[in-house]
Image (tube, rainbow, N blue to C red; front, side, top):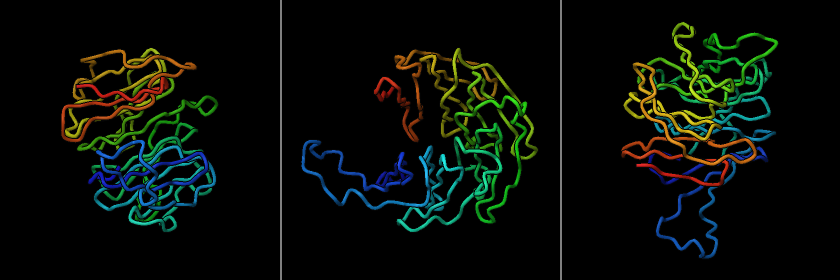
Length: 255
């Protein structure tokens, strides 16, 4: 979703990214289809698009795909991608991507090999590889990578139930904790950077104090379906709301 809320973007199994004009919230959901809602498709990926991140500062869009690449797009139109990262698949297949808030020219991506790379979006170069890979014969899958909004810290949600914190300047692991009873699938940090929220296939959402790394609230949010539960969590950018999306086909908002 763009910062103005006027456009949104979706990635598909067909490898395309669709750009949409957000319809009026008062529109009749049973009204006839309005073709102007669809702005156009961004084509370039050759396999499923896993994740999208929008940059309001540069009006750019980042995408990661099962084709092994991370791409940078101009969000204003449907022109070809501006840059391609990991084109040779050196780090593996990307699983998640985010913009580095403390360094606007950088982005961070996690990969199926357990690697995390910091990239310069202007030079398209790998700046730093974080010390996240673990044993090469059994890499731990990273489900979500997240940049702290004010500090040079990268946070990861992992298949082995851990949440890990890395220093963007040195690449070192600075904290690791068992956070859930099942895979950690999603993360979000509030706009002030004080609280971390995590979702898991154990059906719970947990709220953490960023400074002490302690859990201050936990509640069950979704039911399991096919051994999966919570797929995503989010903080509202200005109001005291949080949202979640689950495998039970529900999206929930909590006050």
